[in-house]
Amino acid sequence: MPVNKKNIWSVIVFGCICCLSIPAIAKDYLYVAINNACQVIDCDSNTVIKSIPFKGYILSSRPSSDGKRIYLNAYHSIYVIDTVTNELSDTLQFSTELSKVTVLGYDISEDGEKLLLSCSITKKKQNIPKLEVLPPQLVVYDVKQKQITKSFEIPYGVTGVITLRNDPNTLILMGLDVFKFSLNDGKTEKIKGILHPEAGEEGKNSLVFWQNRSPGGNGIFSNPYYTPTRMGYFIIDRNTGKLEDLHAKDLWMEYSSIVSPDKKYIYGVMDELVKVDAHTGETIKSVKLKTGTNYGLALSENGKKIYVGPSGPDISVFDTETMELLAVVQLEGDGAESTRITK
Image 1 (cartoon, helix red, strand yellow):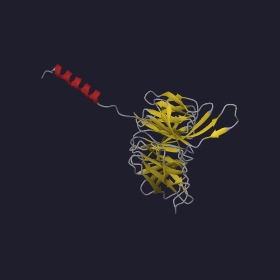
Image 2 (tube, rainbow, N blue to C red; image 1 turned 90 degrees about the vertical axis):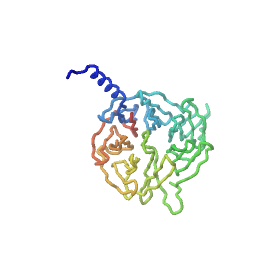
Image 3 (tube, rainbow, N blue to C red; image 1 turned 45 degrees about the vertical axis):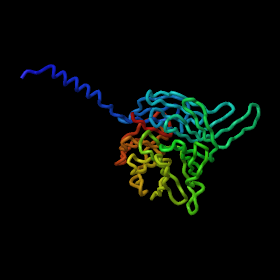
Image 4 (cartoon, helix red, strand yellow; image 1 turned 45 degrees about the horizontal axis):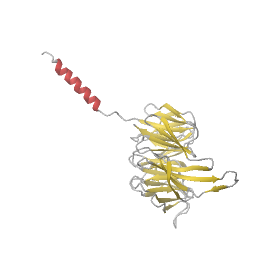
């Protein structure tokens, strides 16, 4: 039977059109802020593919909800990384010669238009050897206009600023206690005691610097806390604003924690990587970290891999099911937190 060339070309053209219509498979990348740079890791090959230079040490990082920008806190300024081009796109300076502004905690509004900054502000006058320390401030910074639009007095010691997906005018502030904060009028409402517990409860210690957040996901924030007799986890659902208190069955020393995409597990880190049942508080497994102490955590989008670190110049990659070490990625310097971006 003779071959119809016209039909063959029709099939080829149709196949090409179908291939072009198939969306590209998204990949995970890890953005790790270290001394004087942000390094980008390809999570398929576990290799550093780019280093984005700047000057300074970064304590914490926050991604925009669309994943197109990462904001890096350098205490007196914030660096903005464009994750589309993998370049430093901006440096937001808050301090001046006569006003020293230190960013203790921060977040980005869901629409990406505002930075919400917990700040310590010290002012001075020229040729006068006297400093004025202002009460702690919640500063609202307009990203497009590049200016402060609002400022409110807030409680002391707020290092955790957490936005809510369902309510753009309300924040959760974590410091000496946990508060709901209104961006409309600046009013605070205590919702959980930490150093000032409710009657019958023990005082707690909970350090919030690392939110271990990546764009999308389940919207669940967790943070370990300690009392004189036990440990537990504060769990905040950013979708609803609800706060839960999970008592852990065992005592582990952890700097920070993260909740799995399916909400079944909590992973915590310091000198060990610990996997805990998010409903019962039971320890499922722990592994000693070969790289020593680590601060932050990030999960792959599918939840199958967890990225531990940094603290020193490395990121450890583990299988979340087996808790087996898969790889150690070497970095150019020490860091404190990483962010997973899927694109």
